[in-house]
Image 1 (cartoon, rainbow, N blue to C red):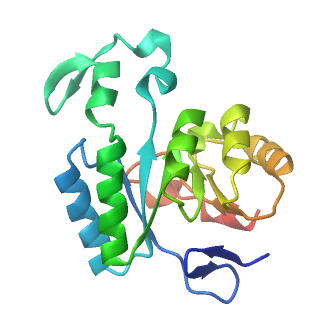
Image 2: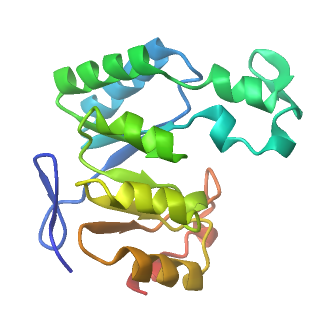
Length: 197
């Protein structure tokens, strides 16, 4: 097992646990909420915060775009909802500045290749492949083509999909995060033995 550098942190054997606070889209498209979540993560000793970045028209399949869903803002299409919770250039500049001020790393899970390119301007410590992206070869290749370490989640994947992804990506600068797809996850579904696999 190798040691990988993420910002000023070393991740690997004989190094402290690297703690990531998952913000995702829990900010509901509100930069004030996002900065408060960053503050809480910094105050509680987290090493990094993680967001999600997507271009809704690229990440939302055509069949789901007009599906109506209940949201905190009332009923809206799934595509409209995705736009509502998505941050753009101004918000990510504020996130970048605020994280620097709070001395906490930040990165994101890009859900499409345009989002990989977008995130690159901020010099993130790594890119994060979401569990759902482990079979998205184009997206994985886009993340791997950057000079950054790649973290991949395993939550929605079979052992075979994980093995295939690792073979495709190689192990250099690859971090594997054992995750689940249930939030909150009942202890009996954690399957922590998988970490040793």
